[in-house]
Amino acid sequence: MIRIIILAIISVLLTSCNFMFKKSYKIIPPEPQVYFPDGQELKMATAIYDGDTRSVQSMINDGVDLNRISKGGMTYLYYAMLTMNYDMMELLLKNGANPNIHSDFYTRPDLHKKGLSDDKSTGVCLEYSGYRAYDIKYMKLLLKYGANINDTTYVSPLSAAVLDKVQGKEKIKYLAEKGIDLNFSITNTPIICGQAAIYKWDMVLFLLDLGADPMAADKEDNTVAASVQEYYDEGFDLNSEYGKMAQEVKRRLERRGVKFPYYPKKDKAASDSTEQARE
Image 1 (spheres, helix red, strand yellow):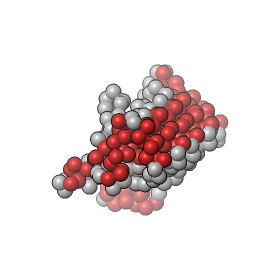
Image 2 (tube, rainbow, N blue to C red):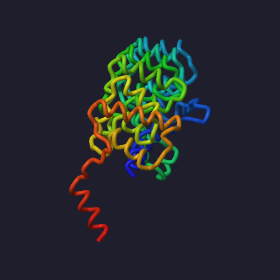
Image 3 (cartoon, rainbow, N blue to C red):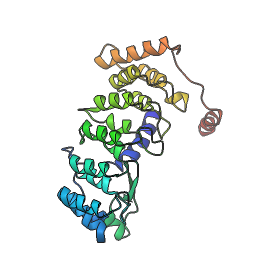
Image 4 (cartoon, rainbow, N blue to C red):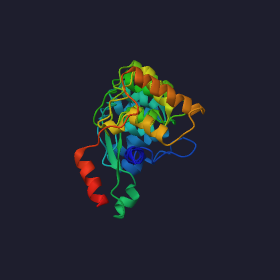
């Protein structure tokens, strides 16, 4: 049940970031008028969409506000990121675009106009760079120009990077080298604990090597130790590849002083609630 709850929370947060992805891991950017409906913002967004750096530079020279949030709730930099145009992003950043401004927009503006959906998405450039669609160079570019690696107001880029089967570990290692807090999570479940909850022991070991705290969860039953105990209790083959990894995680926890079997005391209110349900 704990794993289901953790996965549900993470899924809700990441789905809003993931709506433009296709199975090819390429991004299909919305057309400019969707989030930049008219005026100069439409002209600027169209140039970004078309990859017209000359026109963008001309508008910058004329004083366009690069950090203005459009009527549709999106920044020019975030939109450039959706077009996956590295050179365009670099041009905007060099001229003062702020990578830390959050975009806040309707996920499906077409449905919103019809009164059928009020779902909104938050766009944070550094977090988005963690996804598989983006080469690590995008992450490095954003950090070079001042992206806040420890933004506590939204999902950590670690949450996206762990989903990247190609460069994920490279991205996570780079973020760690640049000083990211490996134990922060807006859901209060650090990435290492979330990975343990779904038995991704290879990633757990990788994060341990980088210095992540396996016991940093907000509740004892959300820790890596709790997930290891559940893995053992559920009877998985400990001689399998993943079973051996789980044993190694357990050994490392024991070296930290964690005692097994690990059964944390339940919150009294939760325990009373369970007892009432049984009556």
